[in-house]
Length: 85
Image (cartoon, rainbow, N blue to C red; front, side, top):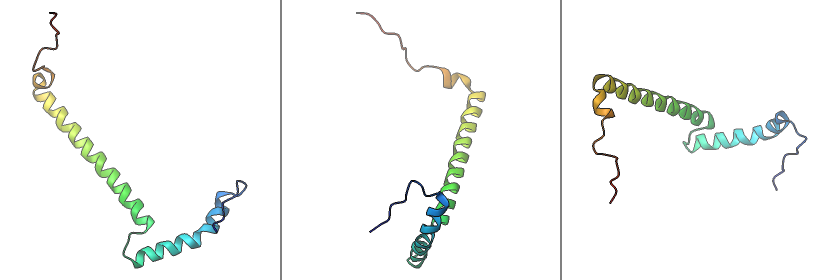
């Protein structure tokens, strides 16, 4: 039966109580060849940085294209006016 944390317990007390079970779970995951929580956090941070870099590079490409040929990006290929019948 799992013990529910009390509202009165501080986060430090809860962490102290849960730390051994978290360490055991991490050790078991390492034995199975799965990444531990620290590795997952590092991967998430790396992925976030890569996404920012890709977004920045795409933005720079669009801006450079716009500076070279602004007419292409601002022209409309068809009329947006609606004709009345």
